[in-house]
Image: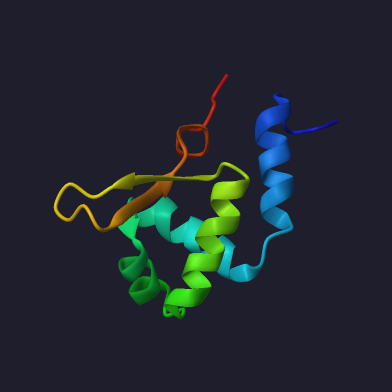
Length: 91
């Protein structure tokens, strides 16, 4: 018996399992600490910025991470977990 009730979250979880450890670490940081810029993610994870950029790209491709323009500096983007990922389904 499957623990997933909906196809979307199961597919996303399976896609996350296939990602490199750096992408999984970025997801955990966003899960625990909330939205971050690329530089903040690099500082928090102790990963090189190039690795963080690659991880973010992979996470955006599968729809786990959303990006928005920073209100304080329009040159920067703020990354957060996508809504479906951030809110657990209790139904």
